[in-house]
Structure formats: structure tokens, C-alpha cells
Length: 269
Image 1 (cartoon, rainbow, N blue to C red):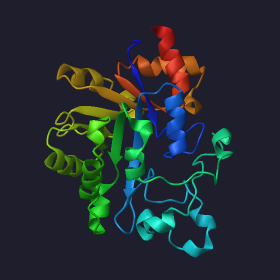
Image 2: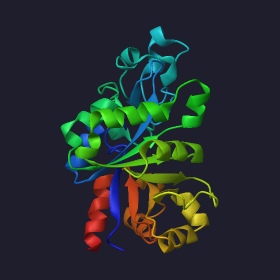
Image 3: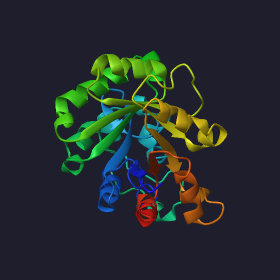
Image 4: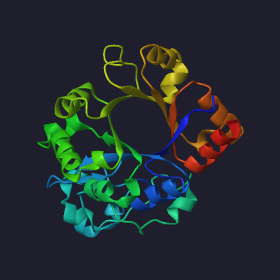
């Protein structure tokens, strides 16, 4: 039970606005070896770290009159996005993180991969909503693969790539072959594609409904990672909540409070 890995989910978002360099730096200082981030494109074909193309909940774009009516990443150039500042997405849960609203820049994928912060670490890079962007004329998979190759990140860190759509997974496999582990994300069960790749990232709500997913994946040699550990979801004690998540048998857990989960896991060793 105590061998479960702890991943910094968008850094340490319970304490700093998610997908910022400051959030990643804090997660590393807490002892996290694995960082997950989310990637979306800009209007001019650059890639930035945001959870979704809609920037209204994670930046100050709504408060900027010069961007009236333009609040998606693909509505803005990188130069415009670089003028925005991050904010806490759920301030009612995380007033501590919300204290940092307006202070941190929106990093690019290139900046993140070129930083000393990631050297020797494991990175889980999630390519977001590729089919939607492709319909809008943006091939995020090709843009992503170009940045990964140009930065040479594979020589400085362990890289895993995650997506939630089978077409995206196939496009990533076509571009990367077997150079990186491909992790298929599941919010709903997909019998046809579940075990085609190198591992599964599974919503804990789906695991609650289908706990056999974990053992079935293990039977074919695939790791299973659960998302997301959020102490706000604890019905009783935080310790009981963490115990329940670990008891599902997953190999790794994405955590918004990585320090608290790490401390609990270390206590089980």
C-alpha cells in the first residue's frame, strides 16, 4: 500500500495558482519528483500551460477591457497572453492560493521544458482537447511534438504524454513511436481503447464505479494513476480520505496538496 507515487497535479495548486512556474517550484520543494501540466495553443501557434482554452477562470482576462469578448487561448496571441496574470480557479476552496492572484505569469511549454526545475524529474505532459483545436485549424499534437523535440527535454527528464481522446493518442503514437510512455486518460470507461497504450490515468469517480479497472490493467502489466486527490472532498478526516484512495490499488495519485499526501504515504512505509 505504501508504494504509491505522488504527483504534483499542475504543481501544488492548493497553495499557488495552478500551472504556474511558482506552483511547480513549490511542489518540487515539497519533495515531489513528478509534475503534471496541461497544454493549450495560442492564436499564433504557441503553447502555454493552462488547464483549458477558456482563460476566464484561471487568469485575469475578464478584467482586461482590451480583451473584451476574447477569453480563449486561441483568441489571443502569445504576446497578449504574456500580459495576463494567473488567478486561483476555486478561491472558495483555496483562499491561500487566491492570495497570489495577479502575481504570476502564464508560462509557455517551452519555458517549462527549458527550466532547470525539471532536470532529473518525471514530467506528465497532457495535450488538451486536440480534436477541438484541430477543427479550428490548430494541430496541437504537431506543435507539441515540435517543442518537445526542439527543447531536447528527453535528455534531461523522464517524459510521459497524456491525452483523453483515442485520436489524440494515435496521433501522439504516430509522432513519437515508443520514445515516450503514452498514458490514456479516462473519465468514462472505454473498453475498446483502455489497454492499447502504456498506462491509464483514471478519474477516481470512475474507479469507484468500476474498481476492477485497476486489477484488469495490472493483469496486462499497465500502471494506473488516479486523479485527483483533493482534501476538500474528504467526508471525514483527510487521513481516512487518503487511505481510501490508496486502498484502490492505484500506482500513483495526482494531488493538489502533494505535501499532505506525501507525508501520509511516508507514514505508511
